[in-house]
Image (tube, rainbow, N blue to C red; front, side, top):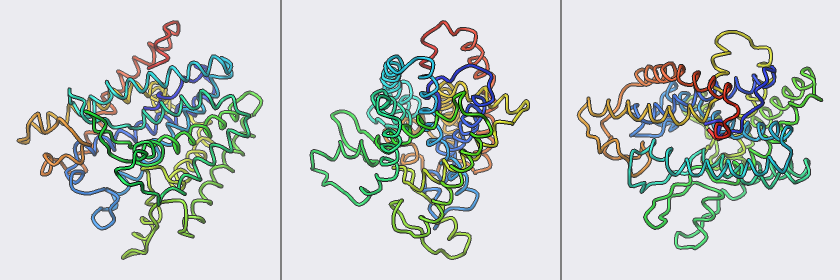
Length: 400
């Protein structure tokens, strides 16, 4: 999913590898959430962050995956900045625009089918790939803004969109579809298609713009020690801002935290932030630790880290292949437990499918499937990463 991000410089520099390492880690984490969607029995019954029904392990199984989308989108902007150093703005703008269009085509075809196995394509989910695509298209224009203006626009989009939390347009309004695509999740009918706007454009575009500006920390003019200090300050500032403003409980998320039956569950309520759309608190709570990780990760060495870096260099490839693998395994599991092929063919989001109530497995089984997916796909991803490195002359590889 991540190299819906642009390709980073293939140099072996530690800076670049630290970004690939973070991307690889969140890809691996991402897979557990998708396996849970297709395999966990409770996924078809209730939301894993519903504090009245969830368990601690289930809550954090879902909560940890909150880091994935913001890191993917943010680092897409960072990668764009680094590519722009080599290409120049005109060439970068054209590349971003074409890449965005290509990702939209993938979202509506190859990726849509991987989620739903529905040849009629009656349900279109605009997921993180569409958010990346639209962010790239907007960024292809925004890169001509002065640097400071880009920072300001990005901050306004990320911190200001929660002002619209309470706005609800009548369903019959001609603006409701446009508003939902820009600001909030919504399901609406568009001719033959049922469209779900899971990732509204503007908040995610703000994350990408800030990621682009963040790329300036990875230029040769910024030495490693200086960059580390800035990363630590950014990370601490984001986390402290989250804690302080979240405690005030007045702005930054559509849902306020509330006292629960125990101090621990009150803590869970406090960190239970909104992803759809990505609230200010959601962004602060996820990117803050990501900055601290990047500050620490530049000195990480070792065999395991090299494996994860390799995954981080082919994120779009991993994203597409892992969804097909999960869905195919889930289909086999459904057939083996008395369900039918049609039960694994969806006209709504997977966990909203009424046919699958009563299907599913324990959370422990979900983790076993997750490990099998990650380990099983690694050789294929490693082959593709080596193929890309050895065939840089093939222009189409930069689009996958």
